[in-house]
Image 1 (cartoon, rainbow, N blue to C red):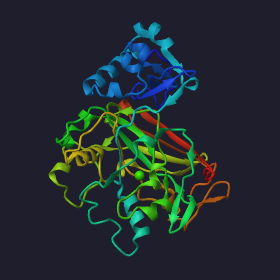
Image 2: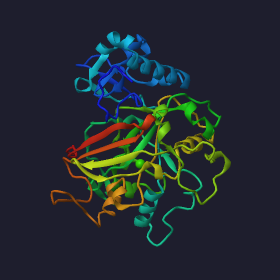
Image 3: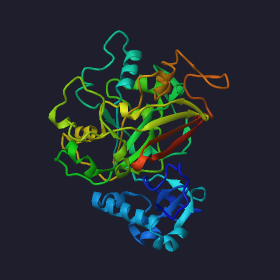
Image 4: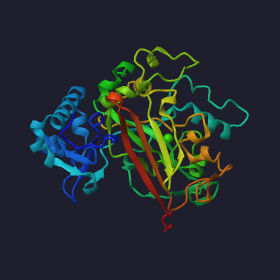
Length: 394
Ligand code: CA
């Protein structure tokens, strides 16, 4: 129970309590927790400078015991009427705040862990051969991305310009999205010491939504043999709220069966961390896809174990993303290249127009919900972006 007047169907009730960074009227950036349609000013509520540093990193670095303590404290403030007089004035309508990038992103890694997505792309790019590469079921494939161009939801998506093929240069004609889920590292690890799958919750603080904007023409020309580069690095958008793992216990599910046995360091059978997150992708307000995150073949603890098995260290603020989330059905695909089958099968929208890839002015919004404690439904908020025309080449 709470002294707050929260609508029963809010995705930001007491079982969620996600963290973000906000400011009011151009003032200092502070840590906040989303509660209903308001933001609790954590810097003011705690009186701790740690929450007035402009990112969540200092708090995340404190580790899981501190995360649990503050979550407990916030819950107490919002439930015990004894705190109402002090706390209520610190709740600011979300409409009055600006939300910022919640973390200072350290390293950014993007995986490729949806079997349906990998098979779809394999069928398009390597027709006639096995849609999955020989390594796919043995390790979670990933690459290191560009941390500096991870930006908060709402950042304009300027159509990238680059090489589209041999002696072809110009604005991308195949601008796409990738609907993904990101995992935020709080507690660092030691160089040289792998992080086992069982230590996932000792290091990872929480989850956000990710749109890995992709220029397919740049990508297909550049990616062999070293992988994604400029086709991905122009912008990666993340949702402003980081939902703590503590809020996702009720969303945990077993991942799909694996038909190739995993090596011991990737064995997650003791403590599965599949997550039943329901994603929705909207183009200009129209629902075009519902990717099911619970279908992912590789889970986040496996990704973390794989990412560090060589001794690579984790830093506070590391972000690793799932890779495009696609389900088995056509309307569960998490990218336009899949939805339009490489451009060969344009989508027909409600207004009768069609799309293969994104046009200038298009708005793409990804949202997600998950089962929360006590039969509630929690929201991961949204990550959105509007496509703007390419800049004039100078
Ligand atoms: Ca991706």
